[in-house]
Length: 167
Image 1: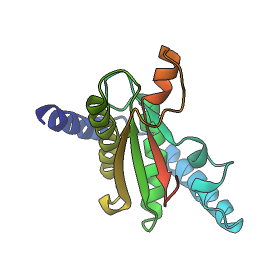
Image 2: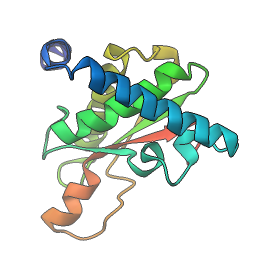
Image 3: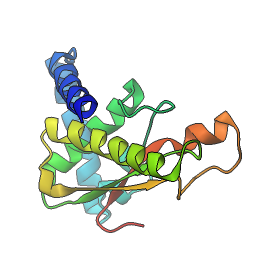
């Protein structure tokens, strides 16, 4: 419990202390997100479901072995989804935490939950409402890669972002 509290606090501090892009970069990012949202709306496909949109392409946040702290590439994914969710408050997501096959079933379920919670916490720090997010842990039960190699295991140490009832 103490470790979770410290990790959550540390994540909040990192989010607050992270160097922020210039105002022009923020404006450009907002314009791009708006353009993506508008172009998807004109096709009646939401941005998160449009295969051409980055929100649909990057849905998994990967973690190091036995870790649940967000890595830099994961932070970028979380930020883009958080920006979209903040602009679409009716949209709901489920964050599914996963683990590789190493460790006991109970350990992997707990680790998957911590990973899902880490993504949820980062999103709420970025302005997403808690009511928009549900978390679940699958532990080692839903691997995307089979095999007993580091390559396969690294693909299974993840949290997946699923929109509005997706399976």
